Image (cartoon, rainbow, N blue to C red):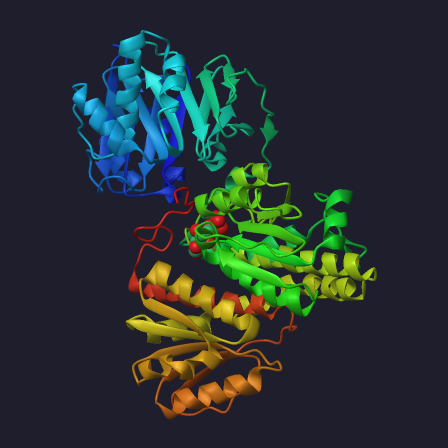
Length: 609
Ligand code: F6R
């Protein structure tokens, strides 16, 4: 939520700010702005509502020059979408960009108003910048000291970058609950919310840790930890390729990411399958293996798409490994009094590793006596990875489309590997592991097969794009797939979509069925299919418009459309069946002409609770 870039260089940084804030547009696209310190040691600021392209146009007309500056793309929280609420915010000689939420901003705002400060915006960010100015005016101390004192007065999660036109050689970066990284250059340094913004410039990054304050100058960087001691943070060399963040031949990132899934799954499996018979996680050591041996329960916590992946894995943990598993949405897990099961192990799932609700759940779990914790995550330097005891990377590659696709299928791949590993450790024999390794090796080919059904799926999309409501049904491990299919559809096409377990239909939702209600059903050939067929019959009798994705011939009545899909092994059926639903959502949104990669009101990385 909200993207930040900043730089201190020897060259004009306008193009850098514009080009690189554009790369962070996936984090928020309500409005964007930038500020630089100009030759007269004053701020020049440009802000506008709408996409970063608007900012680019507006800024280019102004012919600005500056070697230090900051830019921001906003996902509105405090204050509506307007130019005056757009960052950077300025208080006299101090300018700020900020990501996160200041929870006590109303109290601080009234305190500062009493001190004579005039607020031009409704944002919590303007509160911070006036607070910094006030502290400096009162104490005459350096911006660093003023920052430290001011932080003590702020409650909430945030990252921010501040510059001072009286001292135009440095930027101050603060990381507390929201991600911020420093990109290292030669006689120039950069700051951003995500390495994606800086990959065209550098591969060397420092991930700031919780409570860090950094002074970033052209020649050097000084980092202070939360105890105020100077600290050396590790420089991480990124292996993410700049080209991988381009759309290439595809119209949208989401389309590219759907078609990339066979490759992402291959990358996820790479170096983890030993002799084609066993699974090897180099990230896990003896301690973890010992925990796996003794655990008696698994608790998984996640949000959105990651939550749906966790729900599929519950079926696997219980049916394959015979380990009781509970799955909960992170915001709910953190909102109630919890009773922890005996010998329970805690797992979080996240693409970004920055989801505030999931991070909070992890922090809470640490006080609750779990045997240990593990995060399954796509971002190596993320807060979840840093704060978890253990991590397993999904290796989906950079995912830019706001709607998650390849992160879901790679999360499921890692989860299935984990289930297989735990079964072997517990049972002290690896028959199941061997079988799963074999099936996982086939998985990318199976996904390639289902992707070839794109034309047929596009034809179904043409029949559905003007519908107001769509129901998704699934049974067993297909129910979370129905939920994920419905989520994909609603977030990018804005069509109201709901998912139900097939068997639940007759307990209420059947009342919704008439000839205008489309129902999408994924029905793989398995032991549950006969029951699903009965549900299909119930809907048929009431005239609903049914679309079935199945590898089984199903008797066709007038209002049923069957999309026959290729055969897939039962265990990996959930990973396989989500792909046609992703394509369906994509093609429906394409027909509707919505902004597929940046759906309204959403942002890729949800760093506020
Ligand atoms: C849906 C989507 C969101 C995320 C959710 C969790 O397409 O992208 O529902 O899945 O915000 O995000 P992560 O996985 O980054 O924790």
